[in-house]
Image (cartoon, rainbow, N blue to C red; front, side):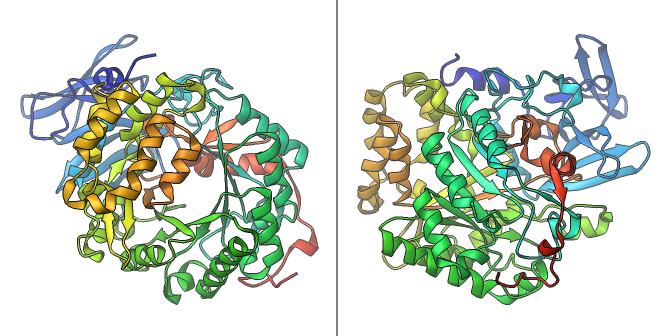
Amino acid sequence: MKFVGESYKEHSEGLTLSEDVLPRKISAICPICFEYLPGTVKKKGNKTVLVTVCPEHGEQEVEVSSNILRRTVSLCPVCHKRIPADLVGEDGKLVMKKSCDEHGEFEDIVFSDVSVWKDFMKDFHTGNGVKVPITHRTARECPFDCGLCNEHKSSTVLALMDVTNRCNMHCPICFANANDQGYVYEPTMEQIRKMYQVLVDERPRCYSLMMAGGEPTVRNDLPEIVRVAKEEYGFKEILIASNAVRFSRDYEFTKELAKAGASTIYMQFDGLTPKPYMVARGFNAFPIKVKAIENLRKVRKDIGYGPNIVLVPVLVKGVNDDQIGDLIRFAAKNKDIVAGVNFQPVSFTGRINRKKLKEQRFTVTDLFHKMEEQTDGAIKVEDWVSVPALVPILEYLRVSRNPDDYPELSIHPVCGSGVYVIVGDNGELTPLNRILDVKKLLELFKEGKIKSKKDFLLHLPKLIKLRNIGKAKPLMGAIEKIFTEGSYRAAAEFHKHVLFIGDMHFQDGYDFDEERIQRCGIHYVIPDGRLIPFCSYNLIHRPLVEKEFSRPIKDSEKWEGLLKPTD
């Protein structure tokens, strides 16, 4: 295994993240076989060309835009044919441009602020994937033959298991439920046990599992499903992705789920006013969310423990993007039970015209800038850190302990990022890097200057920003334990002191990037034993899997209206 720092040099050396330099070296693909390889952008007469040298097809030259920063493989959003896609810097934005022979040209904004993309791409890292791939495919068949295959670059950081496609809501924007599809996808306990075993056998081992759907709480046996995962298969973190309807209505069920070992409720939470719920859900669901939070808090009081909550707003431009700051303040006010907010800019399904796509696309850098504005500068754009920036820390823990106990976190920098915030007594928000020089700490790991507990403890005092030392005191012990113990318990202790603010921008047919899919760390486990990356599952594989393992819906399971009546 390469130690900290080596892999970064291997994968980033020589690439130019500037559209102003010619000639420049970029990451590219062979235009014939779509293999990833270095390319050179240069002037040729009055044209700009990209030159690649493929081991199989030799030197190839294609005309490109002069401001191209990267070439990747994407899909036609109509027919799903694999096609080349250029990522270009244009008017301060990162834009994906691609063309299908049959359906024409497509253009989409990937990052509204290309400077943030350039900064994040410094953390680009190609991981080792899984030790024993489930399927053996070539990169040329991605994303249609998923397994995980031998070409995948990341192990499973978080596994998702759809335990049903039934739901107790009927949202206007959603068609992924049994009421509309006419069939029920609901794995049996025997199938669920087999899927658990797939994750247990994976190396590195996956310890984090999310129950999803549909709406997982419509299954009355969900507490037993959770108990088996926790007690018999050793999962350390079990999340429930939920619209919170049953938590608001059924206190005893909520308590049983807590006793079974649920760690986190990943709660659909679109805003603090009726408007976003009316648009996305068809009715004002906000009172349901408030009641669910009250019940989950009551469970903690009654039995002495219980799951925390992560609020999950789906952001739609012009609908709830004006509530970003208020959502964070709401989470901070409820810090006793809310562990974080994970924002998800909306993804588009189906065909959308170019003008509407440009008007409605909301990217993660739109989120960053609006958050800075709506928190009065408390959380700034530069406070955000991409997930793979943490790779050196995980490599340190893997080298010094059992490597199979830690994922690499080698996902694509565009796929996720976050910032930890300390909430003051009066609700003030202070990002962790105002107290601890987080980026300098990551640099030390990245450069291989921290290789032991002794190295870490030597550098730590120098990284504390003294003007904020008062706020740092309750955190330092927890931070030390993460690097000296390296345990999930130490990580849990750290999270008690902070509020996590994160983002995940899932792909659709317009911004699909195969490099992101190959580095995905969030995988669906399905009854035939395969693991499928999140975005390719929802874009391509979901209907195929559900139909293969489904049964016809019963008349008693059908209902009218936006919210299913209480049983």
